[in-house]
Length: 130
Image (cartoon, rainbow, N blue to C red; front, top):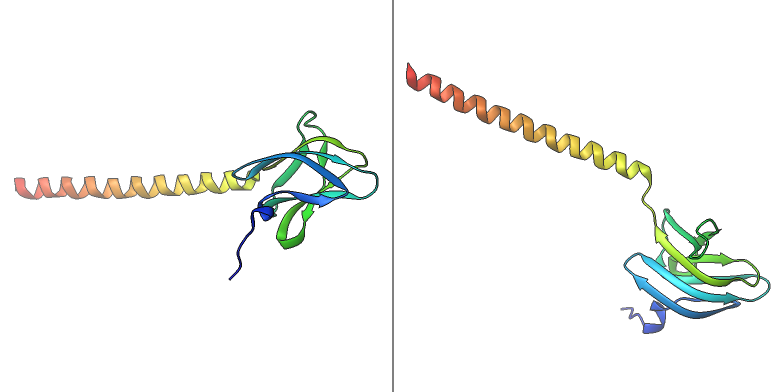
């Protein structure tokens, strides 16, 4: 049996000082300062495609994400980076297409069932009149 310690819920890293962090569901903000050389941080979120990391003050600055230890999100930081990193999941467009197909399929099934129900009720009325 494996027990998680409270430290495993906090971000950690190499050559980086983590000043503050806030996690809400599958989103996280981490305020940090990186040193010179190779620096990264690992967020207590499980990695899977669709996560993105960017600078909160400049949403055009993105950071490379990869699998870290224990399949956590690992964010590579540039030299002497100082700021707040936002990590969040962005659903792929293909998910929206799949949701649309599912909705159309469910609506079609409902329409067919209602149509058959109405036809059966009409048949019952016609049989009684004879």
